[in-house]
Image 1: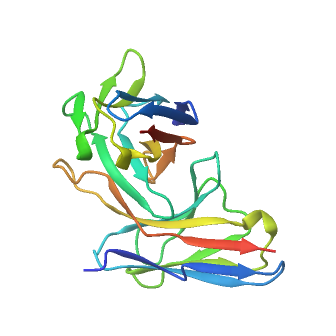
Image 2: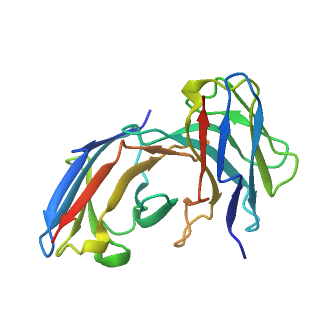
Length: 113
Length: 117
């Protein structure tokens, strides 16, 4: 069975600082990995996804993530945080067969002025 | 093109009452899903459907039923609501193409906030 662990339920950075949100997965088969963002009182929006093409994946809003098989990680980064990045971020792995997603518990990103 | 819509957006129920949440999509996607979101737990899969007339259980199916009579609609029912079902419910659809950039991408609705008193 697949699972996802997001380290840190809350992360706070200063505007302009590096954003690093951590995600580790477990999977018995090559995974498909995703990062979603959720702004307050809204649904989920796809930031980026890894589907075994390139290990460094670029997404929307300047975010990127690197798939590291040896570390079973898919950490999300952004070089310079913006106030508008404040939201909750979810890492997810796809499940074979039913093709549903297994989500991590989420990381709330706070950006300080 | 509305994408994925959910009805209603908010609802308050009393314990023991029943209700149905409607998810509608206009993207002709085969797969549809119901998730619930609770603080600190991410989203958990309740039920899903791989096509019209099919349904299957997810991780947390107890207390819920679903139906997919039409391809574009996926209904989630609570027969006898309990306070533990207070949550935000999200519907999602899936486009699945072998290869290409659309592979295995889920599209989410805006959510339904349900409170059971």
